[in-house]
Image (cartoon, rainbow, N blue to C red; front, side):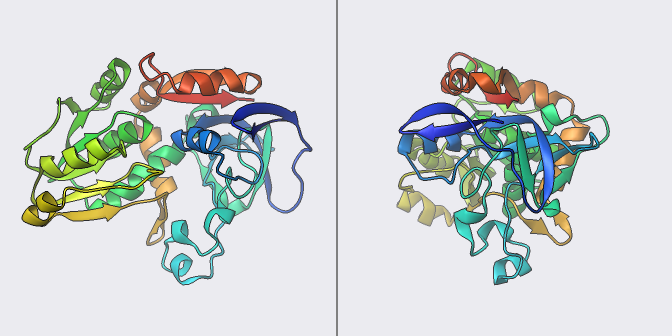
Length: 315
């Protein structure tokens, strides 16, 4: 089968064996290109084989599913508490990092990784469950509800996913975004667009950009005793304005991937939101490419000024 590989900073298309072994075989219909995939490609960060963790496909009987792309041990103290995202297995458990991911034609995963999609939602859209689940987890950790005044800084996929989840929680949401396509998508998802949010007296600010300037702006926008939620994936050091953080007694909450809240998985909550809001896929998916054109798709994913938001690879 055809699959994507990373080789010395380049995208390589390779013929690899069809996956076999224990688990459920999924025929992949779409896999999103995440910003972390681009960072892995550029940095040379070692991965097992096939990249891609934003995955959806069909079972052998045609049932559409998304995939929660991790296989935690289920036995460590973190898994037992529902925090599978910080399982002691680390990167080894993550599909697209420590094991073969979804930029291919097929994948085998444990049945526990399958995420049923709501009626009417097909697998070519279901891959958005993964980035939405990142936002569900963060919004849950920050305690955002209908009484919360929220600012999202950063209009990429994670920022727009955060807007989606926060507005679904009935919060009042403002968005700082740089590019016209991001601004249009933010409005479509229910956010008001602001230039900076400085001195905005927000209850919670979500840093979805991960840059030093965004982190500083986030702290400036918060009210005293407010909460800074670090939702962006940052590959470098993060600095905060110490005096501002101390003077306002800000809480800083970190969030990674997705886990459980009681018996509910963040991925299932994300699937429900995606099924209830038809506008989400239109707002987030800017381009679709066949898997055979993965090099062009990765190149386009860097073109934020040109309107790229979420790029989907389709086998």
